[in-house]
Image 1 (spheres, helix red, strand yellow):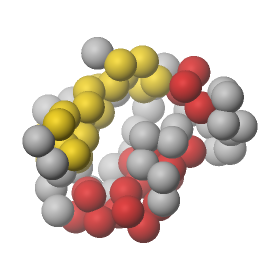
Image 2 (image 1 turned 90 degrees about the vertical axis):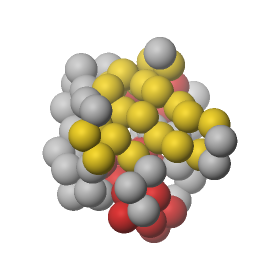
Image 3 (image 1 turned 180 degrees about the horizontal axis):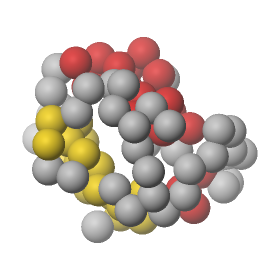
Length: 79
């Protein structure tokens, strides 16, 4: 699954366009490498997102095309 779509489906970022812009600005890394929105994400990958002064680091646990709001938290774990 594409990185920007995963960020939206997992609700780490609310909109796919915002996720795309964050990737283009270099604020998202996958396994330590700066990632474009088109990078393929798989279970076990570590994603780090810079939100201003705050950084969020998560591990991908599962990949799904769509989720309900309650199930979105099961797609990743905070590190």
